[in-house]
Amino acid sequence: MAVSKKRDQKVYKAPRNLGKAPTENPKWLLPTALTLLVLGPAWIVVYYVTKANYPIPGIGDWNLGIGFVFMAASMMLLTRWR
Image 1 (cartoon, rainbow, N blue to C red):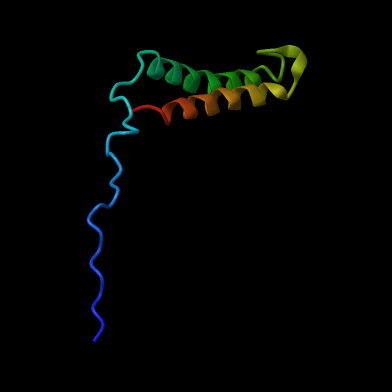
Image 2 (image 1 turned 180 degrees about the horizontal axis):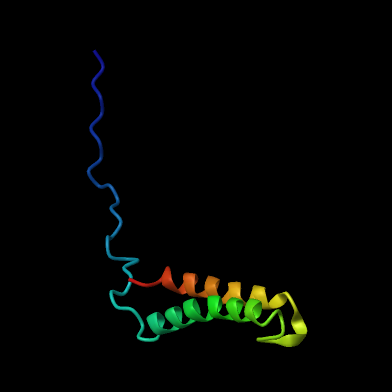
């Protein structure tokens, strides 16, 4: 009857703390994210309330895009919050 070979005991094990992330947030992260999160909807509300005359009069519907970019930037920052 055939005998199975034993497994070699020298198996590579990756170190566990290689990609360890820092445990603290930068001090600017949360205030910046919350400011952008408030500024985005406020920009859009001002655009609708003033009937497209403000916040920037010459660019028209791109004001909506600016408001959504502010909100998206805040969400990107909040994904880094620990």
